[in-house]
Length: 254
Length: 352
Image 1 (cartoon, rainbow over the protein chains, first blue to last red):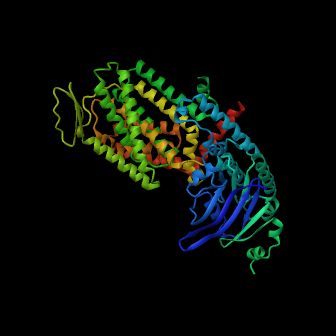
Image 2: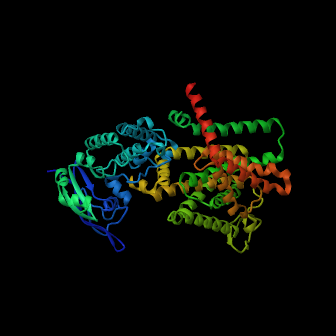
Image 3: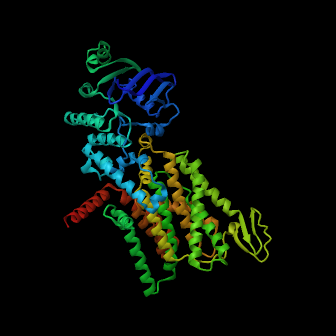
């Protein structure tokens, strides 16, 4: 039996009088790709924001590898092993493509300010190592040729891929992808699916993804959670979800 | 050592190579000119201040351009560096007779003390952001100036005496280091153009090393997208503090060099206007553009002096020149023109 990496129980958040998410139970196991779907405004991104502590949950518990992340902030959650992408792309627009990825490795190359100013061997070795690692990551995401241009001048689909590469650079245990295929054409989406599976296997991580492209979700997710009006509507394998009356109703209306 | 040279002059960073070559070339040119032909007093008197303002511009660019926070108080850091250097130089003048050594010590201590102040001030300042942050830096700049305006500091053979607001010091045949609003008087002028040149090189070295490191990437990442930077584990306040403190050190160096170039210096020199002036240089040269800062500072600092023949109309013409150049460089047509020029240069470079 595989071990849960991310366990969420009774998670909820209120904004003033509005309950955006309530009573959410969710888990992501080792080596698993899990989908989180639901109609617009169902609270999917809010869940991501709680998992990464951009929002502080009002209720409930989040366990990462069995450890409660209640007291952590966004930075510490990332250090503990959660990395994410954003629905509305948030790259470092003025940095080069490769520097975006290297920024993600910031906590994995440890040299001090003095090493920086004195150009010590420690600094040079460290920089060389992360340069190689960053280039390798860019090759996986087919961005290597564009590594020296500024991130903002990449086409839309490539920007989404770069965001995933940057998140992976932080060496996470769990990767949260917020609509990774948004704005991609079918061919790009196909490639993306292969890439997602590939990085899952290569880096031995588990992935939780939000997506509206049902072909992608049904294709790569092993389990799916459906969220509606902030509460869990259904969960199960892609086939179960496809045939679930309640899910169809939520998406299509009565 | 070989690594270091590769780091600095490798192909990787063209802008960096240009910066160093530009500064070194300018230095050699000016040295040759001053040695071979007799240059006017006005020209030679402008050399050291220009170096100071270049360093100050680079320092401010680190905060405004690279870290993305508007600071309006950099003259304050310059003042700390300046008056610290005056004190250090005055106190050690009998011990260290070698002027270069004394200058190095004074500049070093000035930079460090200014950096410490930067570190302390950054705690309340960096809790804020945007316009609020700018206004608080402005306030701190004014506080520093006011404090220095009220310090009376002197020493004689037996003791060092300090007084705040009242100027009653019982010096026995001693020397005043700081005399309130009068500032530093009778300072030994030990700055020279070569020291300014060396300090610019050191500043460039520090800034370029910083940018091309994990710290630099973190600083720029935090500027470009705060939420994303946090999501990849970058501690925003720590990176911004680092940028702010290093910038304060550099501003302190600039101030120290500046102060030791004059025999008298009043605290009023380091008011709000000076901060704004340097901000103009930085914006003019382009945010985050180091070469731009160097060129813009040089041109804009020297221009008012060159316009002296206009007499009363001098500052009017200066302001008009500023407006016209800003309008021209920001117009779409000119941008396209420059981009075209850039592309054709790069293409030529690739063919060769």
